[in-house]
Image (cartoon, rainbow, N blue to C red; front, side):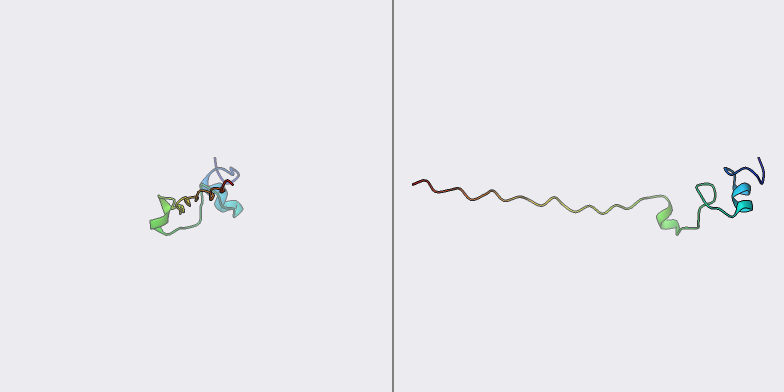
Length: 53
């Protein structure tokens, strides 16, 4: 495990690549939690009833 290992931090810095081991810095508020925005389900209106003759 050293410079040639792509899975270690040292190998990532040697190759100049990024990944889970050497991720770009992210603001601390976003690091731990994923924020998902969900829209409330739209209520469907019932179709108007047809008048019988």
